[in-house]
Image (cartoon, rainbow, N blue to C red; front, side):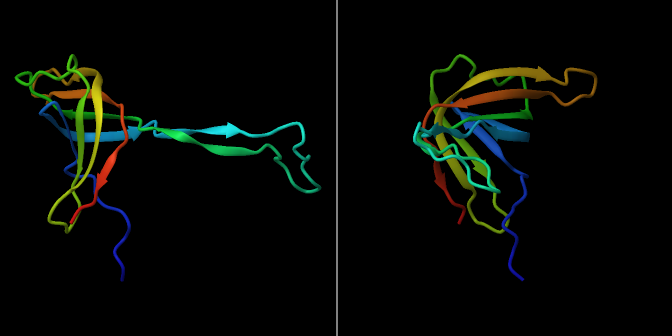
Length: 141
């Protein structure tokens, strides 16, 4: 039986400016490109038993998005909220692989807030990292 084309999220980490964050959960959101409307006055009307006659083409520019998530936190490590744009590396461990997959881009920490400051509570930072360049993907081996 072939293995499923899915893997576990356990072990995902995010590194920027030498600051590594161990993820509790994360979302890579906002990856998108424009749908350019190419409809014109000569576009034919929809035919019988059909709908949708507007036409589109895919834009060339892709927004690399942002990574949002909750990560382990210690106040001994200052989050790089004031750092310049830097290399951002997302590490995706792959079950059965010797090395993890990595996705690398340029970006900066856009926001963070500390959560879980209480008696016997694990401290967590909720962060958003905005990506500012194309993403280079290196597959696990």
